[in-house]
Length: 98
Picture 1 (cartoon, rainbow, N blue to C red):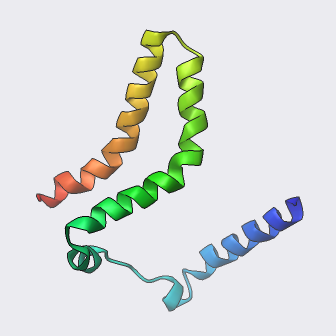
Picture 2: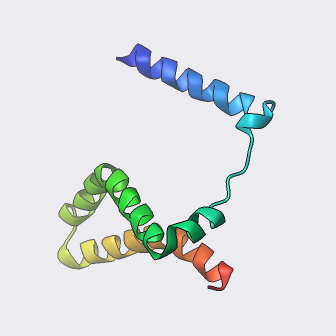
Picture 3: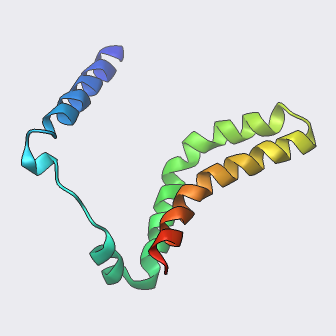
């Protein structure tokens, strides 16, 4: 098992280093055209996909914060955690002026 993980990490490292030298690996992807084609349902689908993908990562952190502290302290911890997760998504919206 560890050997497979080490091989995957090595492949990712090679890809990361090669992206500086191979033009096809070092391209920029803009989502504006994709969002205009998706209409109003596109962000909902993207948000749902993000939520499904992050559920296994977020669950243990939220449960640890909620179970290891008093009710008031847990609420403060969860509030800061939620703000830290939400601000990176709000920031581009604020900067775009939409």
